[in-house]
Image 1 (cartoon, rainbow, N blue to C red):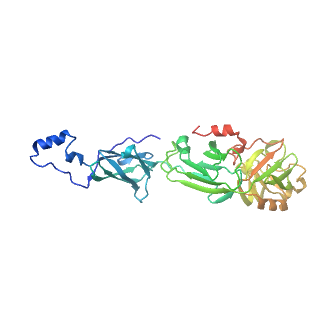
Image 2: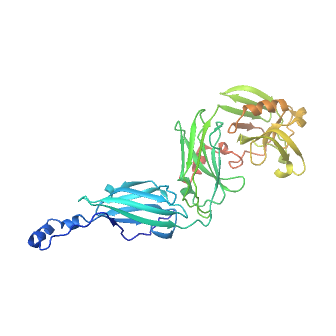
Image 3: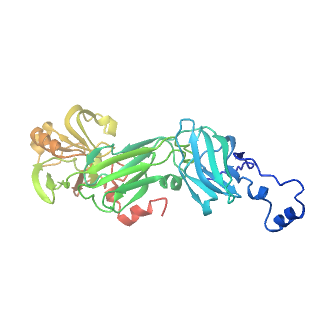
Length: 396
């Protein structure tokens, strides 16, 4: 992001009158000048410079305050609603810079208090207003706040508009965990075609990990996609160690908890050959959607089906689910005859639906599939090798 380079003229409001030399000081006054300046010069208030200043300045820059002839004792930068831009004094008390950027369409008041070596105190006030945003970029993020998720759940942000300055956006994303989990951001293309950035651990989360995302995007320019005008925060906890193993060749699904099999269910996967095959690799349970209408035309399969389906659990954006499929009961455990989903009996689906949660990984294998789930097709991040995943970060 470009640095704001507008500078003000020096401004200072004097809180104490300047001291004056006595009339007729004569030689004694000259001697005082030779020793380092008159008392009036020593007591002159510090000069304060604020950057930026004026109306209609470009947003997205750091607010800077400098003092000459004294030091800064306090600096406050507030908007019209009293919200502050926090900052830090450096360079021996002569410089201050805000930690956050000035946001679009906002008026700021800068109040800086200074003191000199002679003890003169003064306060300077400056006002500037940023130009509004021509285009606003918004974010859809997962998982939701205060949720409990499975061990494979990534943090995912999808943007309304293209993000051309990916590094500037990624720098504003602060993810912390309760146990120092190793992980990385990676930029992807979402299944919808939009820009997206996901954070995943190097390995599955440890159960009980607490995660906080602070996306401090307000005042960040995403490039061609426009400005962000708000921050986003989400906190979640990782639940039990559950993995769903799906073997399409053997037509069975096994729920494992803490590395031990809880139950194995006969299933029927996607029909071999053509577009009705299932995906393989690791898919992550995105949502438990309950009873929904499934229409094959929405996933490019023509008029193959249009029906209400119970216990629906979404695995990809492209339409792969695990769900109850009583119309296929003769094939469970025997043959793959679905239109790409993983079907099971009503009774098995009811039990399984109650056991799993969003974020649980489905590790799917099979010889005849459409291929590996892509990173942006749901949460396919786990199908990308770790080194390759890290390389997708805009920050190297």
